[in-house]
Length: 224
Image 1 (cartoon, helix red, strand yellow):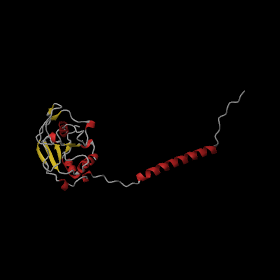
Image 2 (cartoon, one colour):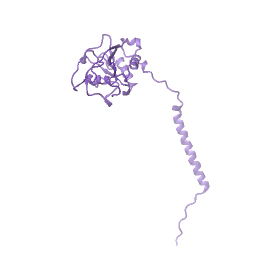
Image 3 (cartoon, helix red, strand yellow):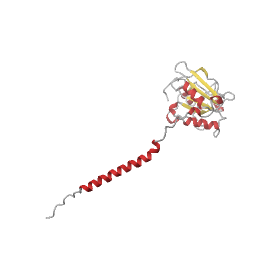
Image 4 (cartoon, helix red, strand yellow):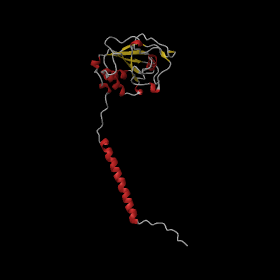
């Protein structure tokens, strides 16, 4: 009759060697990880980028005083696709399409190729967005265009700020010597159409305007 196989007995010294090898391997692995992470962990805190320092200074931007007028058009939804005329361009309030921008349609920077219709952008004003309109003198490749793009890159859609082109066929142009219009629609009470015109992009001017007129100061705050 064949003998039953006996379980292999592990020598205690071999077990100790195995534990030692495992321990050394773990320590070596941790040393490698620590060495890889140390340059990042040992870096000093980086200062937060000040968006306000981008572009021209407040004086160089030659911004006009902030203008306020009585707003109109809250809840005045017109049929989508209807061409609307705004008496003072670019608009800071007014009737608009009921089809508003949402999700990926909302961007911080629009080109002339992808800009939504003005009538939809006015609806975004009603929801608390500030819109910085740039005229046709600001073209791709110019310093002003690149500064606007840089400013927009420091933002997210949750900042409720859009930079969009204003074209000659959109309506009345900007005042002489001004190439940017900062617009906001305040509310829900005592609604006002707010405008400020600037000659050059200025992060300092943009930040000051946004600080004074936030997305909560709107006819329909909280909407996209």
